[in-house]
Image (cartoon, rainbow, N blue to C red):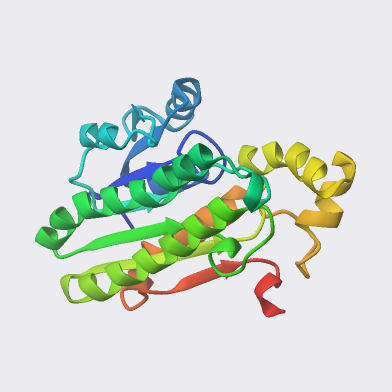
Length: 249
């Protein structure tokens, strides 16, 4: 499906990003895998194969570091993300800004840099790993929710500008996925909501959803692969919910 294509995936060391790298590589793409964690990237390369994956150890909160990344890619998957849980009046300003550098300014810079190659080739796929929080808000996540809402808007603008050039832009919007990012939230959620850590999954994470389970990373990777495949040529500017019914409320 993606033989001869090149992809770039951020936040590729674990969770959704690692699953996407494995899936795109299995579809024939050569994947540039970007993450801050060298050990995680080394493990990914050993698992998938160095002939299929090129690792890039980059801190995406350093916006100047983007200049080192390749831009001649056909598929761009903006996945990198972090989380901080706190009420707005106590939210650390520097953490709010760091989250936006990683989750909104970084995708903008990467899309801006990669579009000329896609335009020149008459084909490209931009897939932004958004969230149900790109469509709905939750308390105590002001930076994350604001960044994901911004990513939704950026994705739609790219779709409008790129549609006549063979390039599509879409968002994937999962609810809670079984990833290190979600696992790290448990203690913060327990403290913020005043409940035991053992209660977070049932009382916080799965409360809004009808399907009472965490999403597995390969499920998200399957949807990303579909959006890069031959049946997706007319799919652009859309947000694909994988939220167990959260947004059905």
